[in-house]
Figure 1 (tube, rainbow, N blue to C red):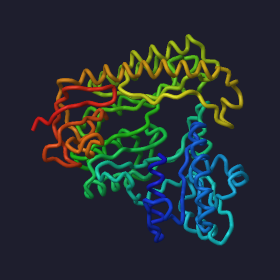
Figure 2 (figure 1 turned 90 degrees about the vertical axis):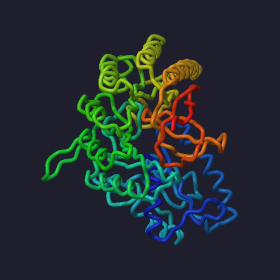
Figure 3 (figure 1 turned 180 degrees about the vertical axis):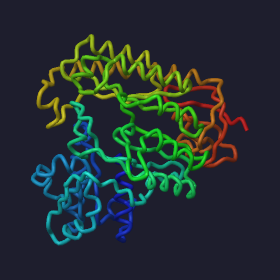
Figure 4 (figure 1 turned 135 degrees about the vertical axis):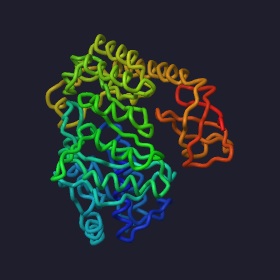
Length: 428
């Protein structure tokens, strides 16, 4: 979502005669787009701000701004502690950036952290920052209303609101015409997408189908799904279109029903595993990835063991894995003691990571000998004689270059792998 927001900001600034530079020392304006989900993300921003402070001492006219969730959450603290910051702009205030920059240029601190119940930036055509010209993100909704006990997002991004589907399909169509061959539909919980007007009601399975119909050569992905809303209707749509990628990111967070209830995740271990089995039933070749939190409040060794057991049963191809980090003002921070010692969190996280390495390797080994359609994204970092791309299952494949270039689909036979990468050869 932050990457998508950066593209929206880039478009707004471009329309107001600003140009990007690849050299930070040349910049007259530096905007740092931030995340508040974990404490270490905020600490990295603080470190970067210290570096930028030294730039400003050498170039006093340089303007520095903080955007996004951290700006929303820490506006007063940032103004007090980071005196060299000129602008603080929350996720719903990006349209006001040109006026705020002008205000900051006149020597005033410029702040807009008002949350909106309507803003989706639907009319803004984002500047594409990925640089590969092959893959792009489309934000379909903003905000979140799940209020998981550990999560700060509902407080920093506001209420859930969906974007007009006509603008989403039009953006996908425009990207295809411009040569892009893959789009990822983004939302805090894409399954919650709902649009209703005089023409009727559209939910996420219907939207996904409309985007898939733009062109069979346009791959469609989405992130992220909440297990409580992953429907059979969605899986049926995915099974019905070859260009809807067979990969689902389904955060589990914990395998323990007790912990899930404490986390306010709105599902049980049994419900989650039922959704895993449904995916395997409708999409037997699909890859499933996840998020896992180690050491949430009151987590026991038995809870941790249940998480490992669910990981084994799900057979994830990949995972994002973290130690629990208490976020201020969340339900967990207000009501639950952060009582799992850090050394225990670290040990449990190491066990989760180790298991996922095994599962990723097992998943990739099953692909050896198979041939996959791969969308070429670019030249391998290790060798200019090799290209890389992704399978429908969102696995990275590296293969011989041949005469092909990014944006093309090729058939690749997999003959080796690591836990992170498939290695193969062109079959054409």
